[in-house]
Structure formats: structure tokens, C-alpha cells
Length: 171
Image (cartoon, rainbow, N blue to C red; front, side, top):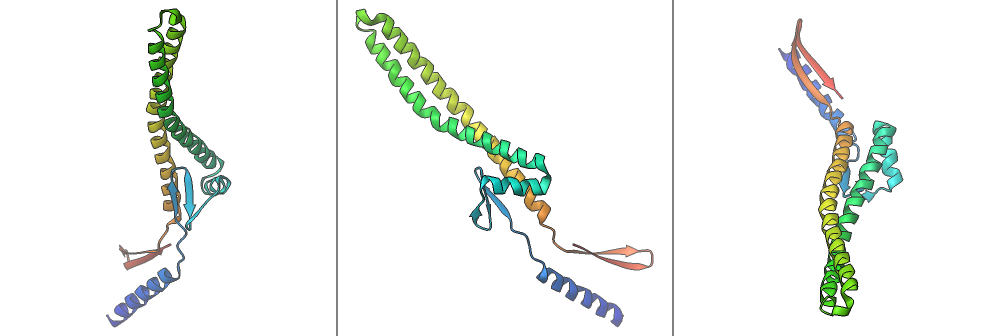
């Protein structure tokens, strides 16, 4: 019995020492389309190299595609409101021009150009926000998968074996 307690004590001490010596890899964080490692923003090339090293060339290409689509969504959602405002004021100018009977053709062209620009602004905003959200979440998912694959902690398991108790330590 004393031997068993001594062996279990040595195992627990060795597991503790093994965990103390284990250096945990740096965790990646994503902020929008930016990848941050050890508190520093990685360049696009560094992030692609990191993901390519982790999951192959397809994984790096997937990150690039998600990054490009996220930035497209942000651009659309930022360009939509100014386009809406310009279209709205163009529409108002066209309506005011219709009051003068000599400018009817120009007023119709100006008014309907304003309507088209206003509709474009609304559609750009409506398409840009979900696009940015979807691809930001995909970039976050990629970083979580990368972190999960690199985060291997030592685990000690005790299980019954045919000849007694089995102790396993997985790294």
C-alpha cells in the first residue's frame, strides 16, 4: 500500500513538473480581418504563411478569400450611406427642377438618377453589413481552429486494466 501511494505521489509530481516545463504556443486573435499574435498585428503574408503551415495551401487561400470578402463588405457598408445621401439630394433637386416648365426633361433625368443612386445606397448598405459579419465570423472560426490545434495540454488518465490500474499521460 505504501508503494502504491509512493508511486501515485511520484506520478503526480512528474505530471506537475511536466506541465510546468510545457511552453504553451501563442494564441491568435482576430480583429476584423487582422490577425494578432503575441500582441502584434501580422501582415497579410505572415497570416497566410501561418494558416498555410497549419492547414495547407487551401487553408491559406481560404483565409485570403475570407479576408477579401470581409473587406468588400466593410467597403460596401461604408460607401452605401453617402451614396444614399447624394442620391436623395439629387432626387430633391430633380423634383425642384420640375417646377420650372422649361426643364422637364432635365428634371426627369435628374430625379430618376437620384432615385437610382438612393436605391443603390440602400442596397449597398443592406448587402455590406451581412457580408462583413459573415466573413468576420469565418476568420474568427479559422483562428479558433488554429488555436485549438496548437493547444495540447498534458492529460493524465487513470483507467482499469486487465492486470490492475492503468495510468496514461498524453501530451
